[in-house]
Length: 566
Image 1 (cartoon, one colour):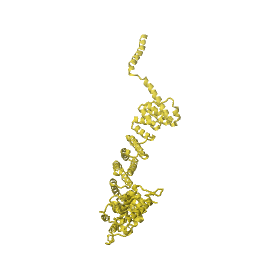
Image 2 (tube, one colour):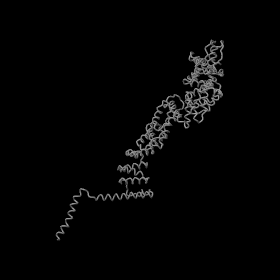
Image 3 (cartoon, one colour):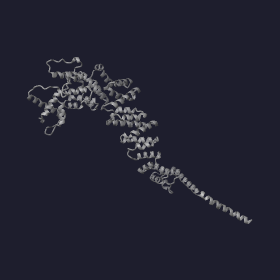
Image 4 (cartoon, one colour):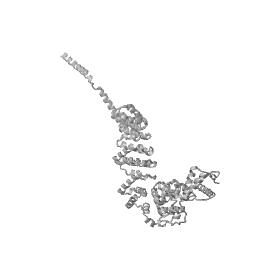
């Protein structure tokens, strides 16, 4: 049994809400009758809330109600669904307005007139009818008028609550969601085609205009076509707006005529975004002039839109068509967009930025690659530090090494985890950039990496740093070919710090051709040793005087002996 709430405040709120939805004014009735109606209305209200799932009975059958939930439902839900337009469904023209009788109740006459003007699409005139009424009166009509006029954001929450009280209001909830480009409205409108068909013609036409752009954006032309099918072919042909919708939904051949029609549709504010997205989708078929126009409109939408819909295709479109020389300025412009603060838009920008940079880094034209490297050098700190972002940084580092831009490598790889592959890139850049100290530091960080040791050994031999060269050589025991390369480098430099008298262990790991190379190094070593010995026998300048004296004396002795013999 449902627990009754006896609070006078709740009763007053419910009665007030009922009056607000129906527009009913207070009439003189006995207090007992009013109390009975309020109690009955409360029971109906609670039953509806339980059925909708907003209120849940506890184990004792009593209902636990959150105060904010009760207040929201009391504000929205009344005894009857206020937006029942079935009585004016057939109205199409102003001349068909029903003629009222002097005996009609003024309140009933106002509601009938209000619904009639809604049915005819005369929303400004309908709003004027209730403009001077208290704001708490005719709330449902005010909300519906604001939705249909589409000059401000519709009250989605209001219609969501109303749909939980009255299933018929689910149509307006779905339309409100589609107006703000909420994809959730797509599933909602999919089950409301019958309700759309039951609307008066003018309202149905307006609903089609409000709902179709988001359906096209979400690639649900099938639903848009179902809405269009609620009209007869004659109705479509006689309506400029419906003909435009038909063009957007159905007439999409891959020809130039279609592009021109889409460009014309972009002059209609409500269809501009949908038309642009269709042009973006047809990018590969667009004429250059149409593509140029679409790019201008895409930039305009990105820079000025306040819409909440998915901008991913537009972001892809503008970044895709940035030339390499415009890459920096274009990406800077994209990343400065107001909508870039949105998480989904920022993710799209990062995604297509990485795609564009990857394409240009892979370009065989060095100019394009250099432009991409300079752009990456500026923006890489803004890109996500994840597997994909780091892969792009590594690719940039490799391309920078190929093009001799060694200073960029360290900058690119700063945020990347120091794994062996990263160490090799850093060592390579330091090797070719003759940054020996950086190279030796990387070797100390990765002492077991053969290629890093090879490069460090070469530079150490060239710089005559035998200690570092020895460490690099000893770390290459498992790589005799690389040890041989260091011995050869030592021979070139005339630096024999790595030479060993016993190289049998090294020989065991070499191929026949490599053994021949080692023999050449040994021959050079022997030759250099002989040259060294010969160099030690050369006359030093300070020895010249003594040598001359001794020579003179040795020559004078035989001459003296010969004179005596004579």
